[in-house]
Amino acid sequence: MPDNTNTSIYAKQEAFFQSWLSPQGVKFVSPEAEKAYKERVTRIKDAIQLKKKPDRVPVFPIAGFFPAFYSGITPRDAMYEYDKLYEAWKRYVLDFEPDAHMGIAIPTSGRVFDILDYKLYSWPGHGLPVTSAYQYNEGEYMMADEYDEFIRDPDYFFQAIYFPRIFGKLEPFKALPHFANIQEMLFVGPNILAYGLPEVQEAYKALFEAGSEALKWIQIVGKFDQEMITLGFPGFFGGFSKAPFDTLGDTLRGTRGIMVDMYRRPEKVLQATEAIVPLMIQMGVSGAKQSGNPIIFLPLHKGADGFMSDEQFKKFYWPTLRKVLMGLIEEGCVPFPWCEGGYNSRLEVIKDMPKGTMLWGFDATDMAKAKQILGENACIGGNIPMSILQIGSVQDVKDYIKNVIKAAGENGGFIAMNGAAIDDARAENIHAFIDAVKEYGKY
Figure 1 (tube, rainbow, N blue to C red):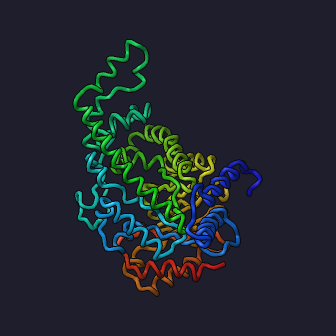
Figure 2: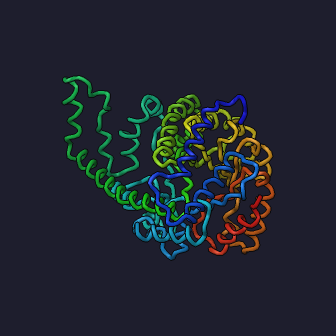
Figure 3: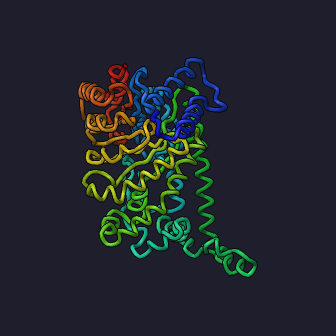
């Protein structure tokens, strides 16, 4: 632990890890399952905290819809038939025995999307074949002239402007007043009347129906997580967050919009990303506190090599992302940014973080270079390509695992992961992936 680092962040992190190690109210199926669970969590903890002599490299396959394909159901089945979802993901965990799993929340509930007429994505059986994964529907869901309104009050913007655009059933929400308007006696009636409009009441009925469906779904999600713990398998994610620039560029302005904005209205981009920072910190911390697991997943989309210049990355992307990461770390969380695409030109910038507080996941980054630049400061993982898992031979997989462990796994601080979510891949290759880590990753 470096002398110049606030020791309280390590104490908070350790408390979170102890909560994850000893989940409340769990009755393991056997002493062997409890031992296996604690060994798996400790293995991940030791890697993140840069312990020099863990027993071996942890292995965490990032599984998208692979469990569905493996069990012979479609991605649509996984999103609509919760019992099939449960059994398919359970079979995957028990058959492959990774050190941690992703839970069953990632497929999400297609029924909730249907009820709300969700427009931001297409999904299996809704605009896409039942055997497909998701497809983002690129668009401008915040207009260029709405920056000031968003910066002034992001919460109200999401409720009254953004929601009506991405949920067809919530379009009437655009008539809702700001809650701050409802103060004294004279202000109540004029600002409450919108809730009496038939179209607004119908929108709330749809929202309540979606909430009821989401409650059914989350009960299955929670039941799965609890059962996996009793069997000795921890879930990897404690919560989720995003880079502020990605929240703006993915969700609101769209790729074309945000690229233009960096040149035409750079100060508005900077002000908007700053306004998003506390929202993203709160999102991650609340998830960790609810789950008792400190690891917060942040998929990074628009910071990759080639999307913007190094100078633009330093100006628009990294400063507010770093504020989110530090905000999470200061609450004891372990940020897990997943760097989609290549981050080879970003490594020198992102290394500026407290030691032993981060897990950087990489998609197409040179892992030897990442280890050289980040290895003394942060745990790294990733870069096992989908092409090998999908069409390579078992030997191809084993050879790649052996080489990546040699490049990035020396002296700990490495978790074996694939570079992108696994959907329809060869089962024998996923077995080879996990087995090879257990064979070649011993210290």
